[in-house]
Image 1 (spheres, rainbow, N blue to C red):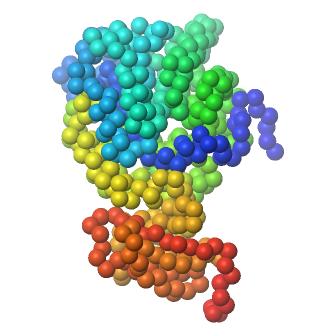
Image 2: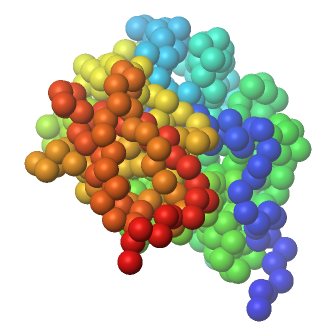
Amino acid sequence: QEIPLKYGANRLGKRSDAAMKKFRDNRLGAFIHWGLYAIPGGEWNGKMYNGAAEWLKSWAKVPADEWLRLMDQWNPEKFNAKVWAKMARKMGVKYVKITTKHHEGFCLWPSKYSNYTVAQTPYKKDILGELVKAYNDEGIDVHFYFSVMDWSHPDYRYDIKSKDDEVAFARFLEFTDNQLKELATRYPTVKDFWFDGTWDASIKKNGWWTAHAEQMLKDLLPGVTINSRLRADDYGKRHFDSNGHLMGDYESGYERRLPDPVKDLKVTRWDWEACMTLPENQWGYHKDWSLSYVKTPLEVLERIVHAVSMGGNMVVNFGPQADGDFRREEKEMADAIGKWMQQYGECIYGCDYAGWDKQPWGYYTHKGKEVYMIVFNPPYSKHLVVKTPKGTKILKATVTNGKEVAVTETARNEYNVDMPAKAPEGPFVIKLQIEENVSSADKYR
Ligand SMILES: C[C@@H]1N[C@@H](c2cn(-c3ccccc3)nn2)[C@H](O)[C@@H]1O
């Protein structure tokens, strides 16, 4: 029995409109975390902090006014939006999510509602505007990351404990509405808002505002997508409302983690987007990446394929340097992923969950009448075991260069797909042509 909610999910099931289909078909995105935190890069008063660099203000307990003085040093002389857009194009991402404002409160656009923006720095120019144009000119969609929590704003409250808190936080929510309307009207090609900094009690006690913010943006930008992390319902329940229904247009809880391909198949019932960092937990630029494990291109690629195989998107994070250039590891990552996507992107873009049982050799994705096998762990047996759902037959198996590999039926709905004679150097794709809803010949007992 469902309970009545005023601010719960306002839609059941996946959105089926063209804008959501584009969001879904994009599949691979990049995150850009760029802000004042890139200047200190994890170090404060000669002390290196190994926590997330974009949280340095918090780790080093820096007062807001002292932290915001970093603005005097904001002058990325190597910044070139066209170069960034070319890098994204070469990596094969179809969209880029940009931090318009992170928790620190510094705005990459000249907001007229704040004194802490690019306009008040030596750089002066509208960085966000330059990036939106450059990415869009490369055919790449732009999504906005927006942190509701704002450490620069005197009216922000972590909780509402008094009438004064209520009055201040009401002013803060109006300020936030103004900034969101400003972003939507200044940059109308934006396709998505990805809200963060919404876990505090103050927001959970104002679920009504989160529903209002979603509707306000959808009225201003028809088709725009909104992540579940913005949303709290009448009772402060986040992401999924008190009746268990997903709020927003896609689940955005998989940050630096992924659903299990066997135990968490429920996620295939809704749209979702994961995001990940190259080090263990660094979104903003940190000068010392030796402090944690840094993922290889293969490990990043496996996470991208894992997400798509379960009907999700994957966003890979980049933390540009204060000077507007990218560190070597990130340039190399973009290059390596791009090379693979160039050759095998058809098993990612526009693909979805195949509904077949996960096998140890890798992952399946599905598009139209084809199922793709993405092989990460070739077996000593030289056979890739495939179990198809009841009524589904494999007609043919080809590797990307068009060469067929043998398919042997070994039992009802079970096949051995041969490894190609010359196994490729790295993860590769076998494309299966399938026939569904066939009655399996009764040759089995
Ligand atoms: C997408 C990522 N989300 C931000 C984040 C938030 N948190 C966090 C930290 C403590 C409690 C709740 C959430 N940790 N990281 C990171 O700073 C980055 O922006």
